[in-house]
Amino acid sequence: MKDVLTEVRGQVGCITLNRFRALNALSLDMVRSLTATLLQWQADPAVQAVAIRGTSKSHATGECVPFGGFCAGGDIRFFHQAALVGNPELEDFFTEEYSLNHLIHNYTKPYIAFMDGIVMGGGMGISQGASHRLVTARTKMAMPETNIGLFPDVGGGHFLSACPGRAGEWLALTGEVIDGATALALGLADACLDVARLDAAWDALAQVDFRMPDTIAPWLATYSIATHAGSAPDAGQIDHFFALDSVPAMVQALEADSSAWARHTAAILRKRSPLMLHVVLEQVRRARSMTLADDLRMERTMVRHCFRTRHLDRWGASSETVEGIRALAVDKDHHPAWNPARIEDVTPAMVEPFFVSPWPAHAHPLRDLV
Image 1 (tube, rainbow, N blue to C red):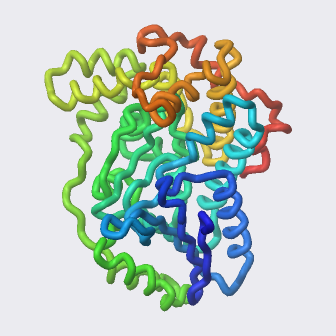
Image 2 (cartoon, helix red, strand yellow):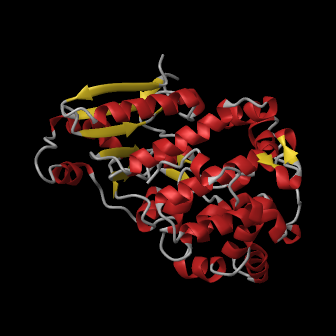
Image 3 (cartoon, one colour):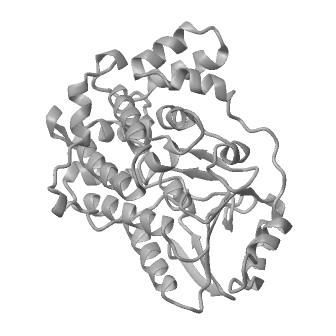
């Protein structure tokens, strides 16, 4: 069975991520299939819009069913294995994935993302650029990369830094999971669909005439529902702590606060990679004044340094990212040996080289993005 299923229904190119046993985690083959399909449909006048959804395992039968899950991210087990053996496809994956993210953000036709269930990491990369980002009551959204010694990539600097106030720093540093209502409030979604009518909404897209102006509005009105207050804490709390100048200052202030939310947030940050927390804060704040293309080029530079951290003499098994993936997804001991071990021990000299490109500008893998 293919991991990416495609068909044209009416005027709509329909994509179903079909790797449900891996929570639709993106492989290099899936990235290539999505890119080729989107480029083909962008040039095809018979296709006027694109819709993408995920699949999940039925609790009743154990079989694959539409919806219930979107995409849990990139295939981190592949990242781990490829980094250990020096597989060049690891480099290919990030270059091609970020190019796909850029294509989606700049797609010339409506791109409708059904963000039902888990939407994390690479799943955000193939949905945040959509013209219509649709969540549900089951949506569980996050950029949890600091938990594996990585950073919120796939354009994360771009779309997180655009969140109101300092919500982008909060989401990027903590990796907290938010629901659909909070995603709407933070500008990471556009509408909420009724879970019970997802199949009907998907099928009805085939009847929409996308050649007419704003014809998707009645469709959205038919299947959208109102949402209640989301899962985010008070924006004032987020802004108060996450506008501080540094990660140590944030953690110190959180630990000095008596509220349950502050204690919870401080404890989360203490579990994340200290090195990558510092890198991520710098990433989000730089990205705020960047174009998407420049942000993706920065992130492509950063991800090279995550797996080949030459300025710290760390690569392969010793890199922060490979160690983080080992602890979470391979050995599953949930005790990564972060280096440095403490937030307070990270120095600017450890952080700054993550933003220095190992390629001259004319040879950067994403030099052609505009």
